Image (cartoon, rainbow, N blue to C red; front, side, top):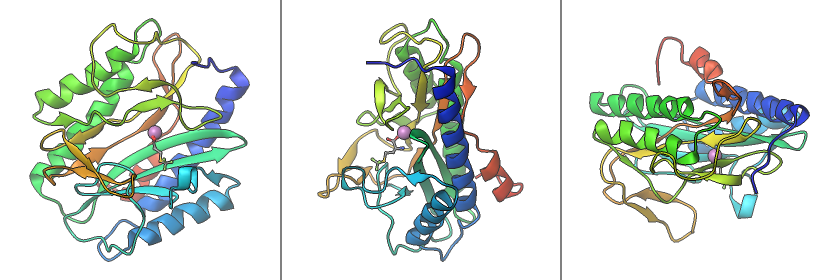
Length: 260
Ligand code: MF3
Ligand code: CO
């Protein structure tokens, strides 16, 4: 069942989205060699709590972190740990914040220090693919138009799209209908209508699309152990261009002139 949100509900998703964006801005300040992913998780959790929010992933079906930590070949749902970031790593931090009963969801993949030029291009293309998906998210179009835009752009650039996980609707629950795949055919799937809040989150692999689930049932990595990248915004479908409810501006501020 796909909810069309009222103005009041949209305002609540908007506020939660701002808080999750600010949280990732705090996390961004700490991304450097020598920092543990556990430290990043603590920064995020304390910031959310200090601002009246709830870390929505923490305890969700037993998930052990505020952030999903995605280092190098980790695709999604990695656990915070004592792993210490190293120069040349990439790290995705995926976060959901609940505020006043509504959720906002965002993810950014960062570079730790200097990274390989080829990986830099890969991050750049993956981030751009998020905006290709967002541009396609217009009232009157369908879910498949979003996935098609992401997939064709990424594959054209030589990368592959993870199939096992998708974007999703968002509101009172972090995961609502519809599913928002990052692949698919134009004109297929649920119709997009003004008032729908959805998360678009390309999970893109530098090598093959195949992934492996760890025995814990959560953590996933690429089968070929090549890097995977992930960016996510929460957006609102309007009768015009989509409104992006989360923002990377806090991250960009923290990164100074750097892109990742
Ligand atoms: N941002 C992730 C998603 O889009 C959050 C889920 S992580 C979980 O699905 F730990 F809460 F499952
Ligand atoms: Co999400």
